[in-house]
Image (cartoon, rainbow, N blue to C red; front, side, top):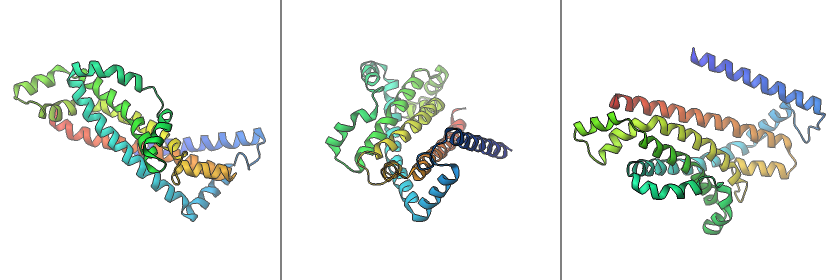
Amino acid sequence: MNLQKTARHLLGALLLVLLAWQTLLSLGGYSEALFPSPLATLQGLYELLTDGVLLKDIGASLYRFAAGYLSSVLLAMLLGLVLGWYRGIWAYLNPIAQVLRPISPMAWLPFIVLIFGIGEMPALVIIFIAAFFPVLLATVAAVHDIAPVYLKVAQNFGIRQPALLAKIVFPAVFPRIATGLHLALGTAWVFLVAGEMVGAQSGLGFLIIDARNNLRADLLMAAIITIGVLGLLLDSGVTLVERAVSRRFGSRVA
């Protein structure tokens, strides 16, 4: 039933987007060379698929995203648990985090290129930075607000560090950490594409730059739509992982 409802919602959203797209094209009188129609975009998408370009660039982007995002959120969760528990240390580090957090990862690009050179690493570092702070701050805040009953249970059973953080604190605060994971995913995916536009020779960001340079608005729009769809699928994947982890920890914590 839920799948049918989701399918109806997606179909309805698709029809609304197509209607608005075609209406804007018709009323604006834009040339299809500059603003492609849905049909032209679909043909461009087919061209990218049959040439093998799209799948290759999707694979490159997903590899970079997985490497940067997973390493970032794992480190951020680990540090967040420790720093959230030891409030005295966090009191010194919090001002540093609050100063660095609002800075766009792209602002660091000249220094990232200087240190790591041109190639794969700049995009990976940008993804790492983009995903790090949302998860770190969400984890620290969740640990600070943990319900005292969990700590009382741990005390009664004689659970001490590091088992306390791993078996009691982390399962209790994971639902709030998951919010940071979703936020970090969207931010990291946006900056992945931006990072690939600078120096990368593959990936969806590079595909956008290549289509723009060749004046192929149909391929450009096809790449943009692909980025959006993949972002939706990745967010849905994080939701599934969140539910699986919550079910597993629920049996432990409840």
